[in-house]
Image (cartoon, rainbow, N blue to C red; front, top):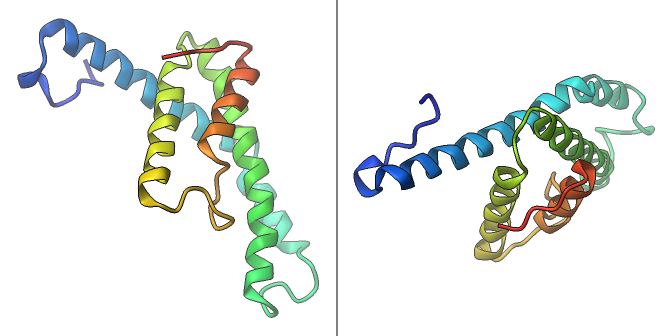
Length: 142
């Protein structure tokens, strides 16, 4: 199995099969999200946005410039999440790997003490989970 986790020594064969399946779903969700950025032309849109940036972009207040570009990025991340959720569910995967990946990210946010701040380039994990479940028309509860 190309998605095999390197921990077979500690798991029973049944547990290893379950872990491998979950890992495959997590990889599929990440690929679905990232492929969606490509399908939706987000890199091209970002370049066009830079060309049409407000007067003084890059020369004025760096914080203002960052805030302007970051607000555009959050919308693209939500769009990639939603498109990715539809893509992976239509490919036969459940949302389980996507949800667990986002819950892990949420836990890391909480443990780091920072949570999701205005500096983040992705929406909060809680919002992302709700977005992908709505987009896929399904709800997954681990």
